[in-house]
Image 1 (cartoon, rainbow, N blue to C red):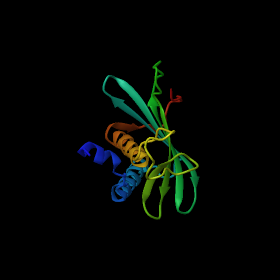
Image 2 (cartoon, helix red, strand yellow):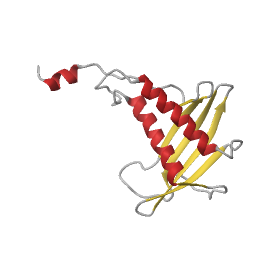
Image 3 (cartoon, helix red, strand yellow):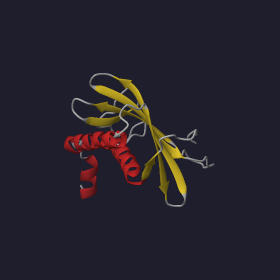
Image 4 (tube, rainbow, N blue to C red):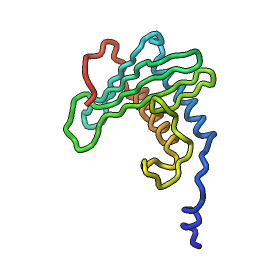
Length: 158
């Protein structure tokens, strides 16, 4: 058997330490985004990127309980552009305050740590890690290049 075939047959094992670290860092990033406006129900940011594109990021507070909070994250261009693919993104984030972790959920279920590959839903083996890494990238983009909008203009994501 060739080395490539051996690697293909090897079962994927999630890296739980990296996943937990990513969740802890995302929790801290969200805390930094909310800093100074913890009592608000929404946080709006404008992000200017290369090519004179202006994007918007909105965090909206959802259900809250003693140990968890759900938030909705929406990200997209400020002005609508006609493209062949979706340019906006909506995510549901669950914050676990007792352990200081934030993770992506789809609102009613959590993602599994491992998926068989290939599968009918076309999910990656490490779908949960990839989604949480995407959250980390968006939050970092907002923290490094975003500007808080205290009185945001009304707009809708494209």
